[in-house]
Length: 104
Image (tube, rainbow, N blue to C red):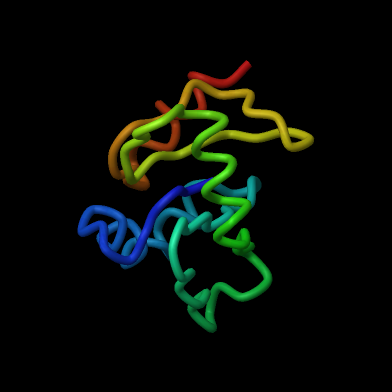
């Protein structure tokens, strides 16, 4: 799950890299969790990327990262529970393997 917001420049950088992130994350699916107004999933990625409602994204960020959480961040979830060490800062396609190492 990629936590971000439109006002966050590094989040927008991640969004522009979404095709590469999706490819690197397979077979896992990415979820865009924007705490403000979510951006649309690019047409070529429809069916491969989910979008979480902003209120849910904000609540999840508070629960997983605490008050004053920074964006962007990435979370690994199973069954709605955070199971990976949160990734702080923008996530690149080449860093996805490192992010996964923080997951049981």
